[in-house]
Image (cartoon, rainbow, N blue to C red):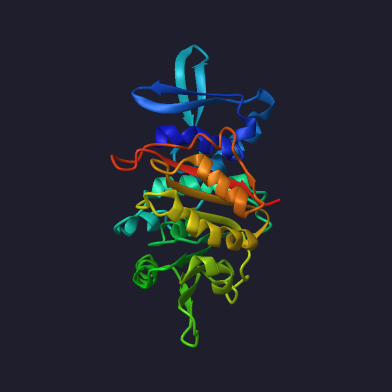
Length: 321
């Protein structure tokens, strides 16, 4: 999976425009992507690699490549020191196992592709707000938090929301990470958990809501920052056999999700493309939103097999003008 996803994820990142050529190579039995950049962009590229690459899901390390050094023949690799500290441990997304969980590596790629495709990218001036409108057990929310974003999730299954909230409390306590929970006992509709995480002066928000995703604006109206998001990322249910079932969900939810996106914001949805074709998803977006669909390389190169049942998973990214 990572061999397929690594190159498109890299090309959608802020490093992508600097790449003149990318080719897969094998060195000492290990697979790499060898990327060539202009000589006059070398210093900028090395700086970006140290901050961007540690965020990526399909790539793990960065090296400067030398064909030779003086009289010493190559190839030789010099590690590039990462310059990124997760807000919470990345392992938070791996620690919780539950039925139907999407692979956290793919979830990280999906989240990155969405963030990189919008106008905000890695902006330090404005903290990115991520909504997963079908959050399940919270993998996307934990990754968003680790990457330093505020994370918001909506899930119809009450038990999933309650058990996720319990996990958040227990995990943060075990890692000695400060957390404050907002008392929501007076809330009338559905169940909602609001957490403020991190030390004083450097906190992030995580919100879990039990409710219908087609009412997402209502559910997020009273949270910190309101129903306004920079990025919306969703993994559509895999068990659906016919597009009609997905179409019914999207017809109600897409206009609501679009209304929550800030100008320049992005939306990324992944789905089981074994039975539902990409053109059907594009038509749904065109019918129910005014979003600009990114339907050219590298955005069309994320399709990959998952297992014997899901022979093809794909993702679609669209941006709000």
